[in-house]
Length: 113
Length: 114
Image (cartoon, rainbow over all chains, first blue to last red):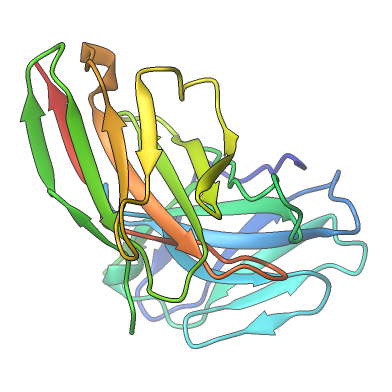
């Protein structure tokens, strides 16, 4: 699986957009970009994923560069409840035996009141 | 919205004892997983399970570990003889399958081995 690089920590003011970058320069054509977050020691929470196109759902937007070597997760109006560790994970599409997620250390996002 | 549930939320056991951690995956999901997270460390993959057999396991998942889907709803992780270093949060996850295979995680079981 491709390796990802994320900043260790970031702060964002409440109500502002939080933009979390992820570098995945070795991503291959059949690999998706997934974002999860973990609040304290709770179970990782799925946020969004994408392959090539930008994606948006009720939680966030995912912007993937044209060369797919990096992406940005955008939380449009951050609240205090968005304080968490955010993980960017690259994984292959549906291939038997490649289902596991490989978590890195993620970005610790702190929302400042 | 369907969720993965896990029981118990906390488990304290003595070294050498057997523990069984239980998970109820989302009902129409076909793929099941266990992960663990030692305090302050990364979330680590343990095992994936599909069609009543293990499809992949990590080096952590040695002979002391086993998984089972004893009925149509539960998915269990058994640790036969617990060690101090098994103390961790254990997360169950499930996915539907198909392109993408988004995994949804349960809230975890905190296991403390004394």
